[in-house]
Length: 235
Length: 266
Image (tube, rainbow over all chains, first blue to last red; front, side, top):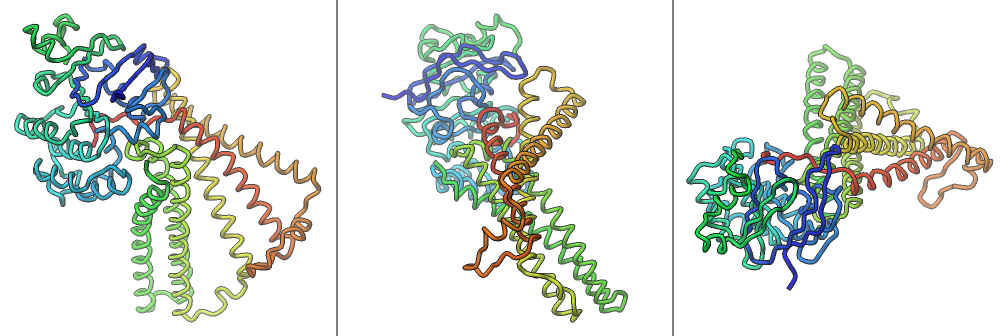
């Protein structure tokens, strides 16, 4: 069976500075994966490379068996795909534009998700609170029928109730055969969701482990992650 | 995969909406001018003159707005993550700009025509040769495309250099890079025009000979006179420059130009 994601020998430099190096990573289908790392570890950059918004890299990236950038873009739904929407637009207009541009965008799913997350269709983007903007980002991302979903720090600055609503949406709306990657440095936010954990440190993947294996060893995901940073503050 | 036509329509829709707002402002200005004419503060000729001037300003502001929209396409995830080859995205954006310009000009021309007819001012267009006018409009369209292409080239070169070299966070350094890339872009055009001129001279092509070899009768448009033929020769040269620079832009777009990194933004 084709993997959801296969990365080989990935390296990426920007401004002559090594951001990622020698990344090798394979993710199976139907998993929720936590991409963990301190601020600046390269989580967002890795997601940008997978999604196709960062392009000048070495190595190979394959999503659901396809490698070219346009094909990968058709297979990946990335939470940053909302960057650039006119802040004066209403929530409903975002759905219309997404329907026009992405053949796999399901308007009916978006409407249900928006209702579940208590998003007002008539509200303008710039009038939404930070939490509601995050909800909109999540609703747009999950309304596509993709093979791989990338959520970049979806709970950053979000209150507990909103976080719970978003977590339940993630569990309910991610298709069974799809793989979902969530990046975060607040591990406690997402640890109950995860099937797998990938840790990034020193510009590379230093660990990939099944969440159940970590739990059966009597360790929390948070403690497992912190063990790579030697208890140092990573906030 | 998304089709190029869908991206084109979406871009055109958004840009037409943008220039429609400019047209609304232009119509507002014309309404004020008409009121001033009715209360006797302006003559019909003044109203026509001022409204034509505001029409030109609207077209220029529209050009800048479209250039800005085009540049955002290259660096925003919203467009760059659409499953479409980069060269198709480039073509869709350029064609959307072209279509929007035609829409803007058509509306401004229609408004001016209505004004001329209503005002009863005679001789406003009496010396206008429609064939020459059409040729000039095509030339201006091609020149607009060339300008957009140059702006894109300059933007892409700047993005590429600032992403590649270290220490590019400094503002003054970025400005130097922008200046250098503008000079490089203009130099490229200069070389291209020199090259074409050399080729044209070497082949012995003149406006007159071009005129005799390219005559379009079927469509009702007949080229006549050296001036008109020279005009079309210039159009072809500019179109060639647009094509070559577009190929270069597509290469930069697919190999070097990445989207802005704004993880917290929606």
